[in-house]
Each structure stands twice: as C-alpha cells, then as structure tokens.
Image (cartoon, rainbow, N blue to C red):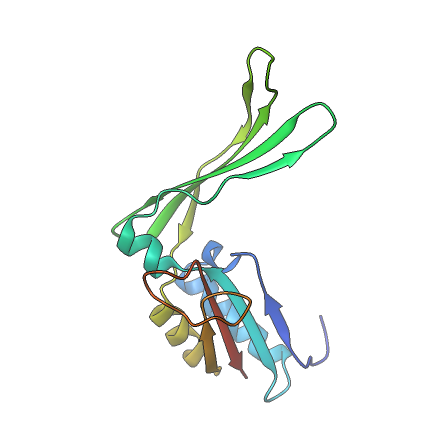
Length: 156
C-alpha cells in the first residue's frame, strides 16, 4: 500500500494471531500509514475475562443449508502463559440421519490472549493514544468480568 489513510478498522479477533513482535511490527506499520489524528478501531475478545474465568467455549453458531445444518464449535483452552489454544471446529448436522453429526474440519490454533492493559501498552509504544474502551460494538461500558469483547478506539 502507498499513501496515507484517514482511519483503520481491525475487527473479528484477528489481533490474537499476532504475538508481541508481530504486534509491534503491525502497529508500527499501521501508524506509518495513517494521517496524524486518524482514528483506529480494534475489536477482539475480552481475553481478561477468558483467562481469569477460564472460559472454554464461545456460543455455538448454526447455519442452515439446503439439506443440512453447519455448526461452528469454538473451544478454547486458556493457558497460564497468556495464550489460548483455540479449536475452531466445523460440524455437519443432519438430524434424523446416521450419523447425525460429522466433523468436517477441526484444528489447533495458538492465540496470544491480549489483555486490555497489554494491548493499550502496545498501542502506546507504537504512538497511538487510546480514547475509549468499550465492551462491544454498541459502545457499552467495558467490564473485565462481563464484557464479551474488548473494543478500543485509539488515535494516531
């Protein structure tokens, strides 16, 4: 990419795929692409809650298809080192058939469970100023024990 941009959005829990060094490179590169004062919105799961409460799953997601249902099962194993072993699994669900449930895909993905304080510190090092932190995309207040997400509005 070339040029300077007036804002950026990082949604969908992509940041946990970056560990410290990768996050530093990403944020530095992002800062270099943004005009001064540009807003950036980051959304990821509330890993403070996940680690502190040892949350081991996210809500099921079921999608209808013509002849079957597809179920997205998301299991997690929070670890003391600040990572989460994430097991995204896709199931084929056909009620009334044998077998009624079939595993289509499943894998192990190690994620960096970015706590709010760690994310804010990484942003500060890269030259971002945090303006607000929300517990979801509807701008609800962030609660360490109850919010499902951590949504950070920052400026370059």
